Length: 179
Image (cartoon, rainbow, N blue to C red; front, side, top):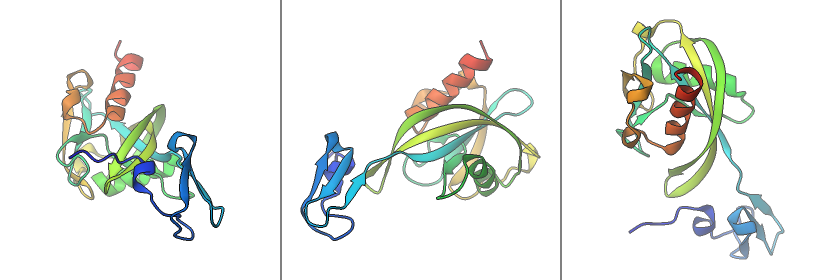
């Protein structure tokens, strides 16, 4: 059974007062409560994705250790925490997931994504950064990464990636740097 995870199909009560008079507006982009007048907007959450390369030009891909998409390939990264800069998230996530320190980063592109977690769609804007780290040989997968692999960008198979956004980011890198 496929469950539609869009917020308009999941949120049934007002997030402030708990009323059932919580209605969707704007094609599911916002909700309003007829009782307490609370308005909730479905906005993108910010996330980062990092492209790290070895000296051969192979891209580091992380194997997801947890759901969603457990076992699929992903770019290392994660959600930007409240009041955190995207660049700070890059540094924090690479340290948490790979145990190494980012020494250089350059913004590449952004792509929208739908991240389904616990039966709920979280819409993200994935901010991609090309990064260098202090010591590739010191990488130790941790947090939500079970292992890492290095693959030439043009050889990454779309069906092995956890999301369309990650495929778009890799394709953007190929178009910008490998053509």
